[in-house]
Image (cartoon, rainbow, N blue to C red; front, top):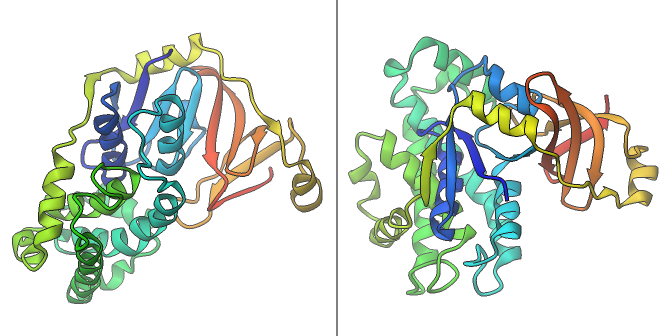
Length: 309
């Protein structure tokens, strides 16, 4: 089996989700450090321009979005599971709350309370990228965002009040990783984080338990070597277009058509390629790059727009 290669940067809260999956499952993985702002030519050679972090590479298969990355890791390494106690459906549904309702105010606070410390290229890039933030009033919105964050922290506190160590019981899983990563973000970015978390003792103890999961066995890899891995590999066979009725009537697409796949919320940079696989929960496109060779880029179906290029 090919190495697991994570393209990420250490401060990325979404990358922390996948690093924790590696820790929970005890996996060895290779780390490729990517720039925090474009251009990212080495990563673009693999993804075709996908804008978000992280990206998982396994040989010539490139997986985008933490939801899909987590499910692919669960498929390849089912034990220990990310979904203890038959919590798969609930954990996947909870991810939307964690990724938006919980993450958004934490991210706005991290930006708003550190505006004077951010390099101008990073700030300019995030203004264009985080379209859910109003950067024109980000500083004055800090008190409001504190109220929003505290509300979500209290929601998590109530969920933990049942007395179990984790949301699904005695074992950690994907639901816990989703609920934890905004806490990890604010712990690393708010100077007054001790005061913010003070009213939430269960959340603090939970965060310490999640931190103890670690990140598995990490080793470094250069971007050049990651591209060489992709060139030497062959993508997994595609599933084809398995929802033929839906594709024919709704999208009017067939395998081999040139399509573009675009997030429908933010980071709306389309990736163009040949439709390789289309199922209920995943869409994949095949593309060729002179540096990466023949690769297949995988996306979730939910919250991604698929249309003819």
